[in-house]
Length: 469
Ligand code: URP
Ligand code: ZN
Ligand code: ZN
Image (cartoon, rainbow, N blue to C red; front, side):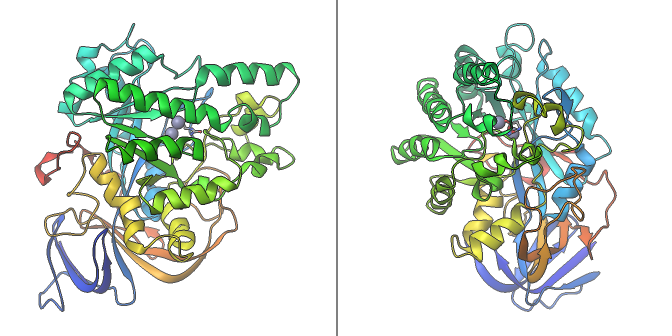
């Protein structure tokens, strides 16, 4: 199949020009001005932006968590992503306690088989190096295209690891070319604060934030940075929410250390007061780290503008409000942590980042696509519009007005974090490797079209042959 995307404003992290993009089979084979070439299909993109498909480096689909399982499986989560202009994501395999990494990988591949709507990779979340996987087995993952290890420094009694596990994993990463990712919060201190709050009869959702103060995020971020220095591994701090965590990342980057940070869409828009909403409405905003004081929102916009933070993910970890979040109606510590977001990242960042004058269009592409692709071994197959790259392309209508709502989104969640927000700008056509995924508000392709992508090691580039179906 060949497709000619004609006359659009092509925007990458570096470029911004009016041009034609010619797609043959799965890849972009020609870019030029007024291309004189026949194609089986022509898409008129005049007045539209032509963007590289979004790359979301942080999602949780079909994941057991907080006594339940996320409501979006691979099919519904990836469908939601496709409508939002995201064509690749990297999801977390959570190593079950006592399980080998091979078994964990098999289990997660089983969840995806036949359901994939977009392309995907996996990070391995290490939970247990004593009874389950070994360091030797962990070291084999990068050669299988799983080139990032994730460690939770919080969620005591569930996913949290001790510093020995964190540090040993960093040592393996330094040897194998993997990137270490951390959920940076001091889980021991939080556990004490949660117990104290419950003993004092504090059960409302707002105590989720009050028992996870920003200093606990700052402390863990600092600790992870220093341990990564000792181990010699690169470090990526996920879902940075506050100045206390931005500052050590900024400092490390100024020193030239291999440290990067991401924030997530929700931290720009949702503040602590949302947790105080009555009738358990606040439960919708229980995710971790928690919504912070509003002052942090400017800190985060400044951080993504100036490359203190290098990526914006969604941390999509969707639950139903009615039936899942409500598990914790009488005890904030039992509310499953997380929220939906895969579909709204591009629209929200375009509206309030670009149209709001906070970041440029190029920087938006860099934060939502190019940098995640580079950091996680997907570039230049993903994350840009260039000859030879996968034809993962979003034709984006910058004038289309949309009201974000759970009544129209494609996640199975029964609420949207940005309900009622009006934005101007929406994906019109979404291509995955030259296949039309979304058009005229419909999912055109069948589940099964998405592929697992074996990612390159940290700092290396991904060339086309590395796909595994
Ligand atoms: O609340 C959140 N973020 N849920 C997903 C798990 C995590 O910590 O990323
Ligand atoms: Zn986390
Ligand atoms: Zn997460």
